[in-house]
Length: 262
Image (tube, rainbow, N blue to C red; front, top):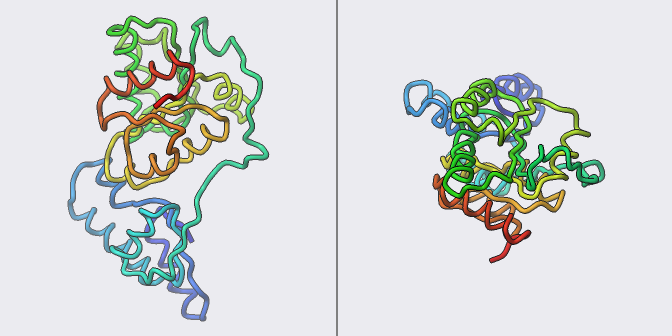
C-alpha cells in the first residue's frame, strides 16, 4: 500500500491477521506536507505523526523514493535499516523523448522557459511570477516567454495573479494537456525551472519534473534543495533559497551562454 493517506495501514492490519506481509510504498512526507500548507504543528499535525509511525511499525518492508525518506523511516519510524529500500522514480525513457521544437510555442519571443507540475502553494509558482517580473522590469528582458504546464488548486489564482502583475504577455498556463503537447513544449524550451518553495517537505522530496527535464537534455534552474541537488547535480544551476533575484540571474546566465557553465 502507498500513502497518502497515512491511515492506509488499517488495511494492512486486517491482512496481517492472516499472515500476509505488508509492504509500505512511502510516497509523501504527509506531516511535512501539512506543515507546509498550514504552517502549524497543531493537534492534526501530531495525529499525522502518530499515523505515520504506526504505518512504519506495521510494515514488513518500506520502499523509499530517496535517502531522505529512508532516513525518516529509520529515525522517525523506527524501522530496521535492512528493511528499507530505495526505489527512485523517473519517466519512461522509451516514451519520454525529445521531439522537434515548435517556434510558435515561444509566442513571438526568442527564448522559452518551461515548467511542468502541480499548480499549488508549495510549488512556488508565485516566486516564478516574481522572477518574471524581475527579468522583464529590472533586467529589461522582453524576449523571454514562460509556459507553465499542469493543473492544481492554485491554477485560477495564479492566472489572475499574473494578470494583476501585468505579466500576461510573458507567461501562459496551459492547464492539463496531452503528453504529445507536453513533449512539444518542453522540447522547445531553452531552460526548465523548478521553483519549489524552500521548505522541509520540498528539501526532502524528489521531484519527477527534474528527471523529466534531464531526460530531454534541458538545463535546469532550481533553488538549492537537498534532494533536488542530488537528482540533478551538474545538470542544474542552484539559486539561493528563496532569492528571486538569484533565481532570475541563473535563468539569464543559461540563456545568455546557451548552456550551463560553472
